[in-house]
Each structure stands twice: as C-alpha cells, then as structure tokens.
Amino acid sequence: MKPNNLESLWMPFTPNKAFKKDPRIIVSAKGMHFTSDDGRLILDGTAGLWACNASHGRSKITEAVARQLEELDYSPPFQFGHPKQFELANRLSEIFPEGMNHVFFSNSGSEAVESALKIALAYQRSRGKGSKTRLIGSEKGYHGTNFAGISVGGMVKNRMYYGSLLSGVDHIRHTHLPELNSYSRGQPEHGAELAEDLERLVQLHDASTIAAIILEPVKGSSGVYPPPKGYLERIREICTKHDILLIFDEVISGFGRLGKATGSEYFGVTPDMITCAKGITNATIPMGATVVQDFIYETMIENADAPIELFHGYTYSGHPVACAAALATLDIYKEESLFENAAKMAPVIEEAAHSLKGTKHIIDIRNIGVIAALELETKEGALGQRGFNTMKKCWDMGLMVRTNGDTLAFSPPLVLNESHVDQIFTTVKNALEQVD
Image 1 (cartoon, rainbow, N blue to C red):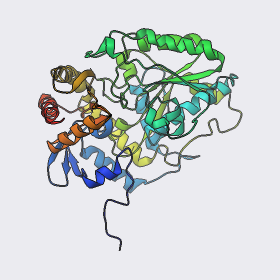
Image 2 (image 1 turned 60 degrees about the horizontal axis):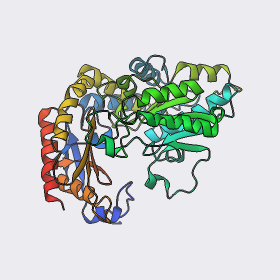
Image 3 (image 1 turned 60 degrees about the vertical axis):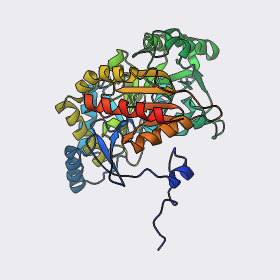
Image 4 (image 1 turned 180 degrees about the horizontal axis):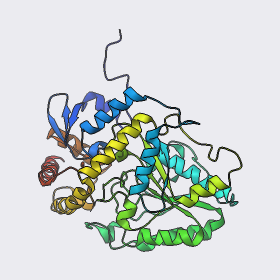
C-alpha cells in the first residue's frame, strides 16, 4: 500500500510546500483549545475559522448529530422535506430581523452568497424588472470562492487568476482610510461619505440596470474593517431610493460575533437578504443559509411562471444532520447567553488589543465586537512574510492566530473570559518582539 504521508492532499489557501516542510497538525479540540500532534494545548484565538462560536467539543451538538444519524441520515431536499429543516427555518426567523421569515439552505458561506445573488436576479425578473441584472460589490469585500462570490468580491488574489469572471459587476470603494482612522476603537469616525460611491454607480449604470449590492457589515477576511459611522445607514437609504436590493454577508458577523444575533441588529440597519454560515452549526457540520425579506419570497411565489418558483438548490440543502447540529447550536447560544457574553467581552478585547499600540512592527489596530486586528509593517519586498512568521511563532507559543498578508486577526470563541484575552494579547506581543 502507498505509505500515508502529507503529499496527496492539496490544501486550500495554504503554501503547500512550506507547510509540508514544517506542518502544524491538530489532533483534537475541547473548549477554548486545540491539541497539536505533539500534545500541546493551543489556545484558539480564531474560533477555528471565524466559526466555532460556542467553542469546541460541545456534547449537546455531538449528541444531537448522533441521534439524527440514527433516525434519518439523509433526506432528498427536492420535492421532499423533513421536520428539522422546517423547525430550523422557524428558529432562525425568530432571531433574524423582523420581516425576514424565509430561509434557503445551502452548505457554506460561498453557496449562501451564490444563492442570494441568484435570488436577487430571479426576484427582479419575477416582478417584471428583468433589466435589473447588474450586481455591485466592494473593494476588499470577501464573499466566498465561487465565481459569483469572487466576482462581487474585492480581494485581488482571489480574482486575478480566474479570467474575466461574471459580467455586469461593479464595485464601490473600500472604507479603509488609514490616514484618518488609524487606531480607531470600534467604528471609525471618518468615511461615511464613501457610501456615495453607490450613487456614482447609479449615475453611471442607471438604477434600472442594478439588481443588488452585497456588503459585509464588517469586512473580516480582508483584514477586519468595521464600517464608518453612518456608512451602512446611508447605503440603506440609497438602496431604498433606487429600488436596489441590499444583501448583508454575515457569514462572519452573524451568531454573536458582535454581541447580537446579526450585524444587522447590532448596527440597526436591516437589509433585504442576509447570508450566513460558520456559526450556524458551530462549524461542526457544513451549512449555509440565505434569509430573505417576506416581500422577496412572496413576490416570487405569486409571480412564478412554473410550479417550481426557484430553479436552484443543492443535494445537501437543509441536510438533516446539519439541521440537528444547528438546532443544538442555537440552544447553546440561548441557554448559555453567549451573545450577551460576547457583548460583555467586547470592551475587554478592545482594551487589550489597543494596549499593544507601540509594540514592535504594529502600524494599526482595529476592533469591533469579539474581533480585533493588528496590522504590521510590511517587510520591503516580502509582503505577508512578517505576518506569516508571527503566526508560526504564536503557534509555537501555544496560540492560534489568523493572518491575511501582514494583518493578524483575532476572533476567539464567544465563551472566552478575561484570562483568555490576556493570554492572546500577551502571547502575540511576545511573538512580535521575537520576529524580524
């Protein structure tokens, strides 16, 4: 037999050659910690990948998954249903903004975004506005890795290798203004006027051609960029004025990351659709969801030109085991008041993160909710090297952090306490002092 080694696996978003020379292998997880293959406890400073909001090894979720596998391992989602998918949709409508009572299930954030964009186009057609086909994204936006997501997304490396992408897509500028907003605590003071970029695109393309705009309430994967004060409110006003659907990508900001069920609730701005994933099942089973305003669902149901109102779906939409995991996860969030704990810990994280101002290599600090980022000065001719080396040094010191280029991002599980926060930022400070 072929010997078991590292070579057969092609790892995602990973420098494979470098990793396989010096691998970081995780063998188990419990609570706030991973365990490495050499037996060390690694504090999870990232909730896995912005996803394990309730921490690791939750027996309630494990038991729910095991029961579901015994009862119903799979049910086809086309033309048939099972009880838990309806129960979960109802539970989600209870915690999402008022009027958002219809849920379309998928298997990831990328698929949730794909679904939202297709629903937006189908909705416009169903109400007799088939000319509204243009989709708007933003620079530095991240909306997954499917072609629709990278087309509306604004991260260069995710786009540059894949040709012309979808046609009929445009972007508004990002809101990162380092010359005005460096070391902001929470939402920056400056930049709300950048929402007028959407008005500029309306003047360029005409509102009659624009179906929807998709934004992250907080840009996460590109480096943690909270929206400037008043920015999301103005985007909402412009969308309402010009009959453009507003989609919030809440794959990161949903399920307590900002101390509320959604970023929409936190910012007081209600979109027309919300995409979510990650924290919906505490990352135990892949799942995504697109939650829509009632008027979108009702319009498409009433105006359908075929018995099937939306020709879209996935083999695993609303998978029984994923639904069981999600229902158990929602129970944990409620029973343990994890959203409330996140709200309580947000100022603790803010203070700890900003206490590192002046630390070697740091040129900016950003935070909001249970999210923080340390931006490092880039080494000349070596973009991302300092961030990567710091991540490795933190791993050696017992902490998992996430890097995007030379930005370190932190998004620990929502069960964290002050000792975890202290360990995270003390460790990263010590690591930075040892990195060139």
